[in-house]
Image 1: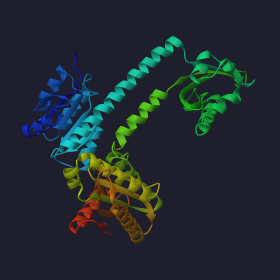
Image 2: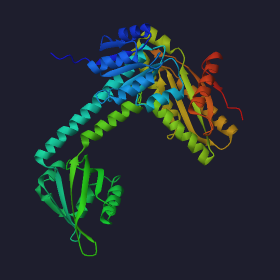
Image 3: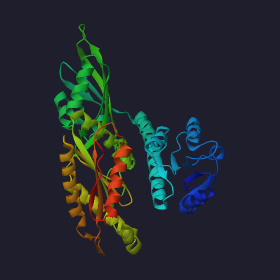
Image 4: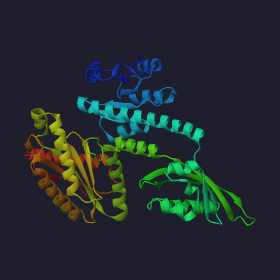
Amino acid sequence: MKNERPRILAIDDNPENLIVIGTSLEADYDIQVASSGLEGLALARQTPPDLILLDVMMPGLDGFETCRLFKADAALENIPVIFLTAVSDMHSEVSGLELGAADYLTKPIKVALLKQRTRNILQLTRLTRDLRASEERLRLVMEATGEGVWDWNILAGGVGHNASWCQILGLDAMYLEHEFGQFTDLIHPDDLPQVKQRLSACLEGSGEYESEHRLRHADGHYVWVLDRGKVVHSDGTGTPLRMVGSIRNIDDRKRYDAEIHRLAFYDPLTGLPNRRLLMDRLQQAIMMNERHTQIGALMYIDMDRFKALNDTHGHAMGDRLLIQVGERLRSAVRGHDTVARLGGDEFVLMLERLSSSRDEALARATAIARKVLEVLNTPYDLGEVLYMSTPSIGVTLVLDRNETIDEVLQRADMAMYDAKAAGRNTVRTCSRAA
């Protein structure tokens, strides 16, 4: 019988790290270990793994070069790689992600985080593989049964269809022929402007028509379709007379795309943006602040006594508290602000467009932080336990592109540790010198 357990290849020149990885993951995965990049490549070429855990700092062939060799091998290029490193800086992380790494973990290895990231990446890989398999099955089915076909007599305004078009939308044979307006009535209102614009561009001679949009099914729900067509008949002046095309149901692909996006950019426990999405939004905020001469702020939040809750009542209780913290944070800020979870009990609020004045922006951010402090001080109903947990909050300003994302995060982190040093359950600020 085929072994269905995912295979993980751990490459690290430190035997102690390999032991930690092996003991942490061996219950759920088959583990292979290598002490160098070349040894890891040899093992992978013999039996390709499902995931690679790769140390960055190794003598000889380092992790980045090893990753390049994996990506250059057609048989190994699609295997996801998680970098492991004791050096935590933005430049190294960006360099690793640019090489095609799936994620980045810092040492010392945190077992719970390693397990969660491993599960997430393998699930993401499986979804991608399933998506490709699903699309191939769909292609074979469409070849056998035919896509939904439409034929538009542009001057007369009538549209004809085949039976498959009606079947995709749950319509009966009376819709095999109808006026063009009945087709546009089926398009989701949010998608209609895009469809009209792309149809017009095609009719004006700007190439073939293609659009992904939603059409209303006979039972009332909307179906995502890939709609394609081209002008096949024009008069002597170039005026289009007839256009033909087809639709294909892409509901499954849209669902897979949404799930892949969620796994890549959102925390699976709280549903909040994760570190990767926060970094992207923070970079955009820095550029936007400069363009509009507006100043934002970053708030770093660490929950006090969280470890005590996990140790005393178990991780399930800790998860409940983190979910409630995320909900409270969302309720405490404006809709266009970002609430993110970095991991563990660490959260970040990114406040945009507070003021053009540094003093006023810092005052507003501090006021919001005190509101957050009050909101998070309310007891948490965890079912079996009514638990008190307080936050330590660090606040800093987000100014312009003259500073890096890493600098902003470091300042907010320093302010949060100042809050902890001051006795916890308080707010501290750290502002960049003028």
